[in-house]
Length: 469
Image (cartoon, rainbow, N blue to C red; front, side, top):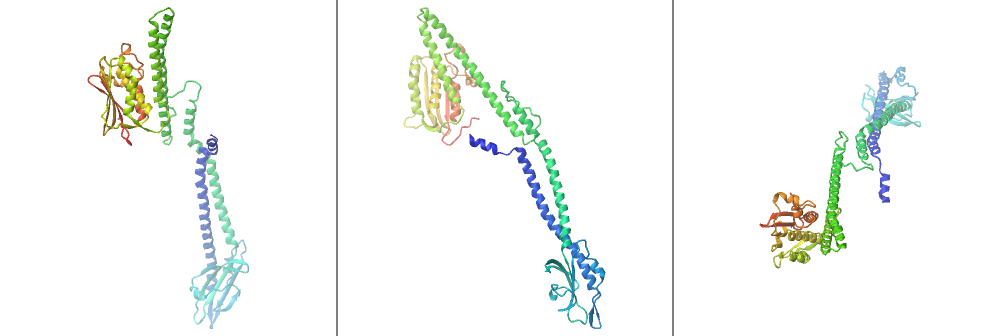
């Protein structure tokens, strides 16, 4: 019990689960967007600044000329003006002819001229004077100059980094606004989405009153498709409960009515016995027997209808159960002038899967009914047969039988087709048989015996299930 309570305490509410389910992917998407945005922003900043660096590089490289066999150049101020920015990045340059420095910073990292393509700028990162720099470089092959001319322009990365950070901050701010707006909208959205569930809960809680339970179907109005199976299952449960409680009320009322008659007889006969009536004691004895039989059958029916799982199945010998039932009912048969027989092939085994007590009570009630509704000089036969359809327990008599149109009615509790004019009884015999057969997974068949009634209980073969359709 404590473990179950702990599990209930740890369980998240449905609203919280949905909130996490909605926010989780949103946060993951925001993180993924941030990573993708960082990569795109870095690429855009790099390309944009490389284009400016390449323009300055091209402006300087165009001034490199050959005059009288010597390399000359004119550094245009506009080329360096292109690289001016608010972060005041340092700008470095270097022009060399082969390994000979023409002008610029001699310690600027020099490239391998053979790897440079002519007239096409190339860019790379390097470390220079304790700072990370971006270098643009190009090679020019001049006429009558055997060595290639290499032009390099470099700048520090402060402006690039600042631009990247500003763009990234704008992206993160946009994502934060998006997530915040989602948080603000998710709560009312969840409330609207869960409103049908709340209405269903309210409809169910409205049934929790101290008055008589309301087991009618729920009235919740239109429900989403996801809640329809739950509502329908609950309505079916209410319907089964309504049937069960109605049957119990009918059973209680019928039982009270049936018990009232023998009790009234007992009271009257006790009064007569006090006055010295000789026949009163006989009437008291018969009324006591009827009351005892009624109580016994009520208890048997209650056990047959008992909810819950049955104990594990066991092997039941129908021959042994039949002999015991005959032994129990033999006196009743003699008093009724009815012959009680067992028709079972010799050397044949009739073992079925079931519960011995249920099988015995079922057979005992069948034999009791067959004796009561038989005629003097008639026979009651217990037959055992086996075929491809299963093992059959057959009880037949020579009585008036039951017309086909009344057989379903005869299964109802407290039903006596012949009324007060027929043999004494409580009308529970066939109801007990039907309930026991259902619990055992057996079939029940009522047929004409010509004359009389033949009741067949069909036990399925081991591992098979009966088809009651």
